[in-house]
Image (cartoon, rainbow, N blue to C red; front, side):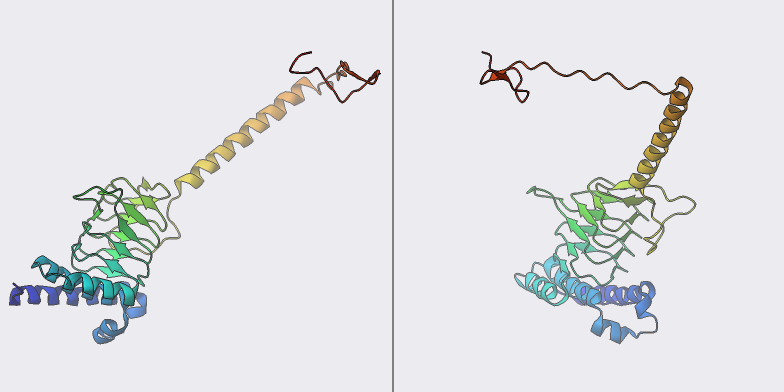
Length: 257
């Protein structure tokens, strides 16, 4: 049943969620906890989920889904009541965020707008991602299937991730490719999306450099051999007559005859 211990734990989680918003959202600096509770949609959605999840945990019928549906209508953020979310979770802006039923989110995770923690196919059981502690997921990223995103990782904006992500790595692209961040560990929330590594751009640059090298070698070789004379051009023989005259518009009939 819904006891005092459960209520106290839920209240403690909400206090930590508000503190996370104050710490990680530059717009919340100097804003009181009461104002954040009143005006931050990401905090509203998470507050509603904490209550819906607690009710879902004790087997309350209907009410958890009603709370989740109402929260989605008000905030634009959809979180299934069964999803497990750790403390210090922060959704910045949040419009379009979807978190599925079997999703598992660790502590001190940050999500930006348009993120999807979704499933694939119609399989039962664990079908949504597990996001470990201190992970930051950029705007529009899609994490699909029962994958695991390792501790301290960072998912670039609009990435599509369908495979496990190693701890302390950065993922970019579609499909997402893990790329180690040079010189530092991407620990905790990090909103520097401008300087993410781009393996596709690196590959294109390498190909362009290779083509330029080959062109230079070809020009040097042609210069050594001199200019080649133009190839001889031969007119094709006319093989068909129309009205007793040769008609150059026709060649041999491919059907024969």
